[in-house]
Length: 98
Image 1 (cartoon, rainbow, N blue to C red):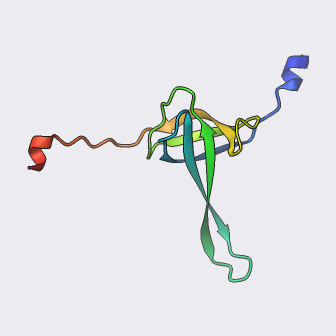
Image 2: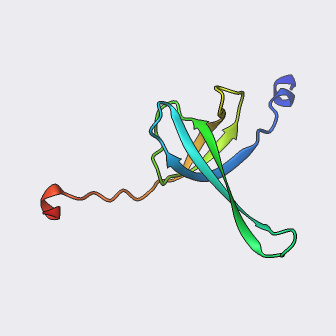
């Protein structure tokens, strides 16, 4: 019972992978729609998060869930939870281009 109480609910966000060129790190952009405080129009706000991807599974364009964790570096405070939806990978043969 003490273990269950110790496991706190971690903060989670769902976003799209922007880049995965670093070793074991992905850049995830999370978009949210909010109302402008003065003009009352709906605007889209974007925030980039650096997340730890141990196995290198996520590719640019994938929709992923990231979970808050302890700081792993100066920028990384999130870890990859799961890949919600894989991006469509279009393969083109070199002979078809020419």
